[in-house]
Structure formats: structure tokens, C-alpha cells
Length: 336
Image 1 (cartoon, rainbow, N blue to C red):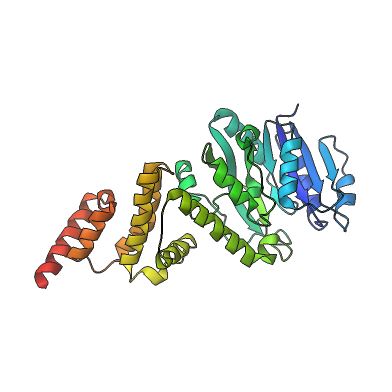
Image 2: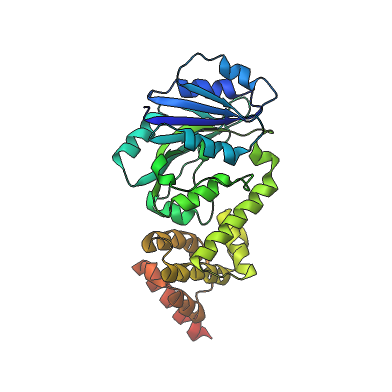
């Protein structure tokens, strides 16, 4: 039995599938089966797959188009490996990707899912922008997943046993992966290999481009579900602040620290009561968002000092920051 199952869902990817397959068959780790599920392609995708003569390849052909969630579930159910690695039919794996991930999961039995850093490429394979690095500590990733999907599916390797009864939901046409990761990380650790070992292709035919609005709407739906789990009720204005922070839209709030403080304080206090996320990890993540605006805040009056102390964020400030805040608040009070 192979230690690993690699899975690629395919549908009309004749332009890219050959490169994807070569990138998998050229891995330094070789103890795997390679399942490819074709979802009724009408181009030469199947012909290209069948041109490879490698016993590790298992090509499954659907009789009718089933959609991505069905195919991911089918692969999980068919998998013979202890782990399953995901990669889409237009993306690429660098040679050491599988080896590094297997090595990590074999040593860390409490991890259910591990990803890698990502290099975005265009349709020709040329690099787009900087390497996508995942810099926050692994123990803060579940908290970060409240804000956005912090792992690229084509970079993931998952412990099969971690799925349990969890499966991809067919009603999710996009972001089906995000929904499943949210469930998995309630019981298992999640992390990244801090190396760029996956190439993610961005082109006009990709789902993320074709269905951008649907993707955004689905992500918002999943964020709201998590806020309900957190038992955190944000006002309409606070929810917009939350969404803007998740998309790194910071500029509108540099002159409005109060609304940022109110929003982050609500999240912080809700988690103290619900205990959905690890207390310290969630606090540290929120503090980094909060601190950006605290450093740019120019008011520092007595009322603000009271709000900051009431929010719980005051205890996270360093000694010098506390001193400055108290002095400025006192001076502003005396000037009045």
C-alpha cells in the first residue's frame, strides 16, 4: 500500500495537465499512487493523461459532470494512502514538495493538514509578483482562518484519518476547500512548510477569475458562520471594518481608531467567552491588527485610554507604550 495518494481533479485542462503530471512524477518522494478524476472533459485532457506510462497513475472517468466537491470526496474515499496531497490540473509541485510534507506529518501526529508557500505563475509559467509567504506562527492559523483562507489547496497534504466524517459539500461551487479546512482545524493542527514548493497558475480560465464575485460572497458566508460560532455579533459598520482588515484595506481607518478598537475588542471578548480559538493565539493575532492603528492614532485622550483599558488590549502594550499613552492622555486632559 502506498504511503501517499496524490489527487488531481481535471476538466478541460489540455493546456496544462502534462506539466502538472510531470511535476508529480518527478518528485523526490516516490511511494505514492496518483489519482486523476476526469469530469467529462471535451478536449484532449484524457488523451494526454493516457500517454503517460506510469503504474502509479489511476485515471477515473466520470460518466457525467459531477463538480469539484464530488470529485474531491471520491478521491478521499478511493485513496489507499495514509495521506492525500491535493494539486489542481493547472498547478505545479516543485520536486521536494511531497518529501518535505511527508517528513513533517510523519513526525507530527497532531497535525491534520500541512501546506507550503506558493509562487503565483501566469499561463506561460512566468512568475507573478513576490512569493506568497505564510509568516504567522502555525498556532495562530486557525485564528487567521476567521479572516480568510490561509492555505492554498494545491499545496495541501492532509492526513486521511483527520477527515473522519467531514467531506466537501456539493452546494459549494467555489471555496469548498475553505469550508472543509474550517471544520478540520477544530480538532487538528494546521501548518505550512516554510518553503515555496507549489506553483499556482493564474489565467483567464481559472475558477478564481471566472467566478470572482461568487468566491467573495461564499467567503463572506463562511466568515459569518465562524462569527456565529464565536458568538460575536458585529454591527454592520463593524463587520465592514472586519472585512476590510481581512483584505488588508487599512487606509480608511488610520483616522478612525475608535471603530477599529471597538471591532477588535468585540472579537477578543467574544473568544474569551466562547473559547472557540486558543486564547493566546487569537489575542496575539488580533493585537497585530489592532497595533497597526494604535501606532497611527493621534488622539490619545483620556476617553481613549479608558476604552483601550476596557477592551483588554492595554495589557498587551509594552512598558514604554503604556507610559506614552498615559502621559499623552494626562496632558490632553490638562490642556482641556
